[in-house]
Length: 303
Image 1: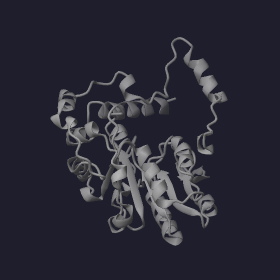
Image 2: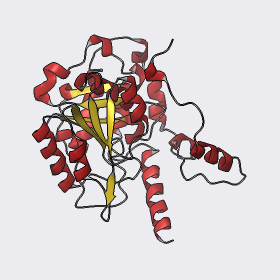
Image 3: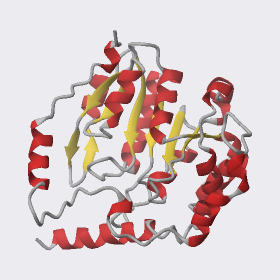
């Protein structure tokens, strides 16, 4: 009755069983908590809460790319980081996960492959499966930092490969793409005529300065590049999801959204200008998140 794409493995894994057993113990401190609304961070600023009463929430004025004021706010956010982004080159989505689905559909026919670093964002497997796309995992090696294994990458690229997908910084290792790796990836995309998908939702959470760290790929037009991000992680606001994709200007005709993809949430789109305007000081939750990461890193390094 149901498609093979939804033939999920529903039985608990040994790891999930072990985690459930540990969480049932009293006094457990869960260092894997990833929900900023559940770890006693400061509440939302009053002006952000008041924005939910914006009369615009009651209107429906669809734009396949997302409301222009919200796209302009995202462009201004990038400007605060030193990147020039045209709002016309941005496409808003309900989430970054939804944007992955669009890109898999845009770039791949059924059975085509996308090479992805491993380990990586765990939901990627399910997103690719739903779109009929095969993920080809490539492991990482440790050379004072975690980096994609380029020899394994070369072996993984085949005639059916349509893109390389990476998370910058990686989830879960936290390793950023280096300048050297960036050039190596661009060279392979040029050589094989494939696209580059870069998920940068955690770009602004480095533990320390690193001169070898590559900048955002949002300004990369050397190969067909799609840069993904969103409010949920960038401003630590998971309750107000809004994702976006920046696409290469010269390929807009093929990659522009259709009316059927008009899915960016109205409330979140109206929120975007107010949220992004709080840059570079950040929202009430984003800065404490970074501070806690840094203090945690210092504490563990002393052990």
